[in-house]
Length: 226
Image 1 (cartoon, rainbow, N blue to C red):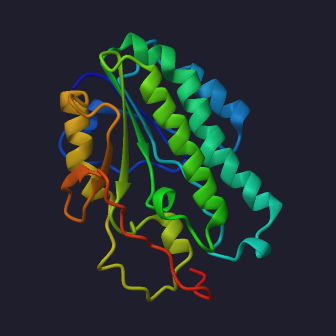
Image 2: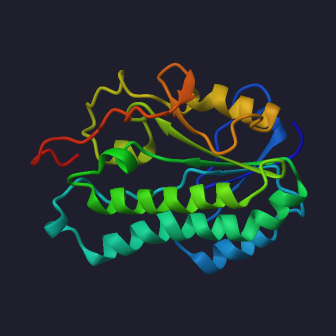
């Protein structure tokens, strides 16, 4: 599989993964501090095989647009869009040198369905999609292969848990393990035949092209703020 670098969203320790995880090097990057992030990204080796951008800032919970703050908007833009731009812009030369390399950007159904009570999140994720798809059309797919993936359902994550009650049942939620088969395929096959694709990852790990079908909306009625 070669040498693969996965810039993360923060300085949290990375748990051990499944078979082959020892071949990946996880690099923590604090995207809330662009200057510090830039130093770390530029310190990576001359060749980077895989860039996976899953960093996201949502805010403390869902809220009507009129009740959101400018600070939340700025924080969402800083992580969801500028952080993506910074990672891509800093690492693109190294990705090209590792040809064929892979860029995996984690998208969301909100890009296609809009997001009542999630206006800032929807806007920034849509902007991220525009950035990634533009790059995909610019880059030679024999050199840098750009892929987007989005979960078919809600995903159990630290951010989600921070917005849920302690007794919440996550039985129907996806987990990071559901992305394992896609991640393994991207690493082993270098995204052969997947350049430019948007993939929907299902509960259980199967994945499929988005195609012309809208993903299932995760929006909730007004008044449901979590």
